[in-house]
Length: 515
Image (tube, rainbow, N blue to C red):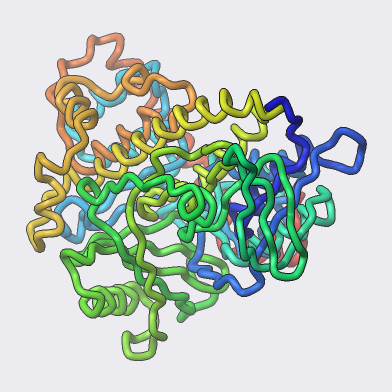
């Protein structure tokens, strides 16, 4: 049990596998004596989904940690900048029904009573528009940085949209050529175990047995190691969040020179909701739905109608969408003996708010930072890992449910049932009761590394029309908040006058590079 951890085997490629391997290799790998040996086994026949991926701003730090240039991401992965999410139709479905969850914190967050001052002013302007310049930048289809801004720097906070297949290929190239990760393109035919139940090796069709001390399961929804081999069950969340299916399409632009969105646009429909991710060369569009509420035929019709209404090709001219079934839930344990699940093998809820890749980053970072020195330490690290990610998954479910629980739509049972009390997580219900009389506080979400901070809850609550009964701010607090609103107005004018169009900046980067 004191055997040193020297060999790590990652099963599965794609963004999750290669990102995990790269983060571990950048910190612990290399050719010097004492460094970890990191191998990644990737099936050459695994189908690629490639519907378009969204990230959080944390991806900028991740790319810097592994030494991957932002320029390479933008050029090689059909990538663009992402400044948050826009939600259309989630409250009541009217034409004026939209709100933003931007990546920038509200001006004065944690210092001024901006919520109370916003309500006192009558809430004539949307909450996000009042406390952040970012929605105004997004409305104008502007980039988050200027032509002269260095890599990973920005005038305003941002993440990325990119082609997930191309991203996996770029990460593979970087990890193998720059970071010393061994790539094994092969099929795993058998999992070999030690007498104590640890995984000893993965037997492959052409490369023999790949031995390891720690195995990382990035095999996607198949979950070959944590699910199939160890039988760790999935905790279903379908009683809270009903979606279990998606349809996805790659949609060409009808105008290659038109505005390029820098937000993920989530549009609610009677069948469910669509994601719309703008890449420089195309859109990635998909409809997420519950098979208990909508047939695949109705969902496909809804997807085609959305694409046509949003300026895409006529419904009849679109290809057949890819059908992606899934079970919303997460594993009872993520680290079992000497195997840890990262990415879809650990669980999946739905694409809303793009938490999937963020969880990959968080998982890989914790493995990197707390990598056990030996097998005896591994059980302690596994317990810490399981505790941390059980908490994180529960908080993600709370936050996603918030988007549904506050809806006022009455066009389908899908939306009506989403606001029924029996589908509400207990903790979220308690917080909503408290928030009727005060704004969300940092202390409501007590971990310093919360996946969604109190500011995110504020953006969704007040974007969804939640109106708490707050006491009027004291004069000094009101003046402080109004000063924050004025700062937003000043920053908005400066940014609107100084930032380039998003598409223009991407074209410039492709032609001339970055500062």
